[in-house]
Length: 451
Image 1 (cartoon, rainbow, N blue to C red):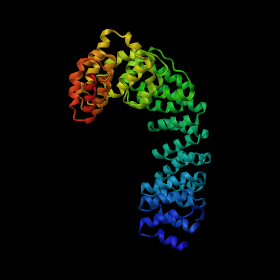
Image 2: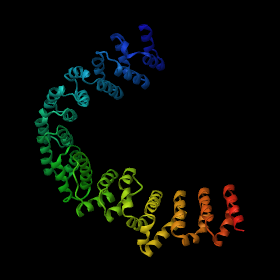
Image 3: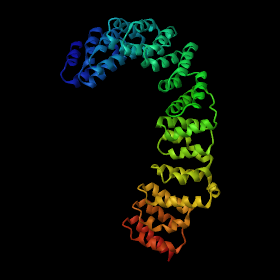
Image 4: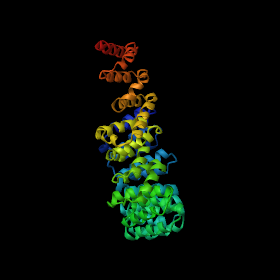
């Protein structure tokens, strides 16, 4: 039986090799068969390698980690990664052979092993990693050591990690992240001190780490910085404050300085920072904030979800700003859907509070969208005109009748069914000749009902 399996494992047909592996029970593997299977980590076929990985991860034989470790030296990156995945899944059982291999490993293999050890997260490797950090001259190995020591929360390594700060600016972000994970007063105090001393270029990299690892002292340091800084640094601080607020449950004061910062970030920053800023505006009512949120609305689902409620809180301000934004946005459909939701919620009451000029401009914005390339926008514009600007709608029936979308013409007929005005008769006659039978028959029916 074993010989038969081995024969299949050595077959030139990858489907036979994979099938043989998939038929094996992880609990029934002896050492000799395992060694044959482990060699297939280097198989040319991805499906075979995946089957090997699945089998080895689920098998409990103690020789597996030691046999797999040497494959991290493979020049084939997919083989290295597969070996790393297996070792990671083996967890603490893989630590002894990895530490043994670490003693004779080159820089690339040391980095790889230490990365895996850090992800396993067992503190028993602390002294071994510290030993490598003390002697290594390779930047990648040093960074891997610092990161791994952070992952295992090595308080013993704090002083050594801090000593590395002056050696190379490349280490700074990883040092901050590691010290933050360790999280002692000494570690966080060093982060806060170095942040205050850093130049703007260094601060940008630091702020991202501070958002992950900061404490209450760092939260208020960043809050104070926000009042002094301008430009992209404020974007990063806003994102960091959001993370710290969620972690520490602290309040962010909403004053003119904070408002102006959020307006700027939402207007000018990259998308990830816009989304971060949107999480800070949710509890504050301000027309300037509402306006800039509406200008951005429709582009980013998470942003929209965070700010949408603000438009329902102040429908009058929403209607005023809608007129300014709707003809400039590339996301007109999202804006029209929002308008209909606010209108439905408000019952149109706040429309009575805007000026005649503002209302006329609103109706004009609807007429401009009757020829939008987006059929849903055209339909929304038509519906809103009949609901809100009836007289204007009647002036644009020729445009509506010529709409290229059959469902838009069908929607127009629904309005015609409710209108007792002879002015619609010529347009009904046009639709009675429509090439779509659904449209023409309905229009003919409406004409008959009017006789």
